[in-house]
Length: 153
Image (cartoon, rainbow, N blue to C red; front, side, top):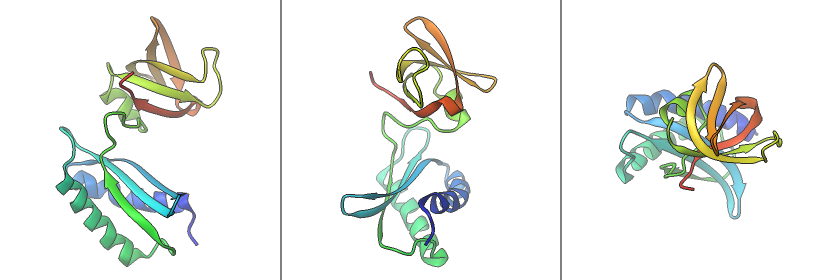
């Protein structure tokens, strides 16, 4: 049996270039057990947002790939959707692209200002992710961050 992380890595290697060719980006892949069984979830995006037709086209491509590659040996449900208004920020380019937007960052450990920071994303400085939190500039390293996403707060 393939581990969830191995499945995600295999699918990222396939889906990333596929989505680029389709004019979209792969935001995140989740593969986990939920209430009724395993769910394989792809979050995709494009400038201006994705449509239902975009999701259906990607779903068909991923389904065909999964049938041929047979990298999941148990039942699962495939979902393809938009990351929504509170999309996760995962890659360095996400922190550049969404500079100026409000973000919520959950830290792995309290760094003196709490485990959750909400502020304005200023972008990157070298390897550091820069936020403006209540008029204070905060620089975080990627390894300090458990999760980061856009927020409407």
